[in-house]
Amino acid sequence: MIYFDGVPVDPAAPAEESVRPLLAAITIEQRRRTRTTPGVLVGTRVAVHLGLIYQFLPDLFDQPDQEN
Image (cartoon, rainbow, N blue to C red):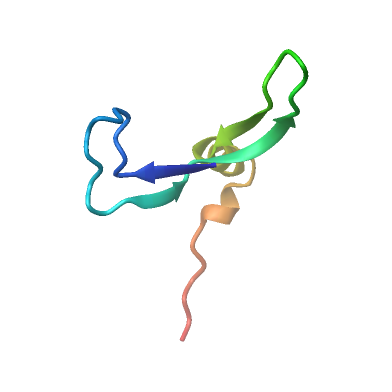
C-alpha cells in the first residue's frame, strides 16, 4: 500500500511541488466484494513488520564488519 507524501488530506488544499510515493503498508488480506459489502484490502504498516523482525531476529539489524 502506497502513501503519497506531499498530497494533503484536504482536497481543496494545493499539493506540494514534489510528491513522493512511499511504502506505507504490506497487504496481508483481500476481502472480495459481495452483494452487500464492498471489496477491501487489509494491510499492516511496515513499522509493525520491522518491529517483529527486530524482536524475534535482532541479529538481522546488526551491521557486519566491513573489511576491504
